[in-house]
Length: 122
Image (cartoon, rainbow, N blue to C red; front, top):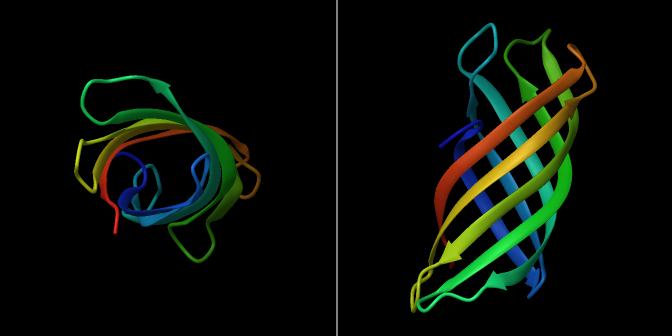
């Protein structure tokens, strides 16, 4: 839920580093829905002890690409911060994140992307 509304894949390289990919439909374009993707690398650490599960905070950055027509393609860079709660004895996690995004092509500027969602870890 958020911008991009779609699917997200997250892979933990080790305990403190993860890689994230997302693709889906995006709002805010002349032709709706637009297509939006991003790829991020992030650093994470357990910051808050909770009785059940784990609450992790993360930060990082990556690249952004979106398109709503053949003539309107946006690319840019993202900074990322968020939190993810892992449920006790479960492969499910719930997350919330904010990503200020610097658009460098088509309509240069800064956008704020955000997302709320859940992930199942295989």
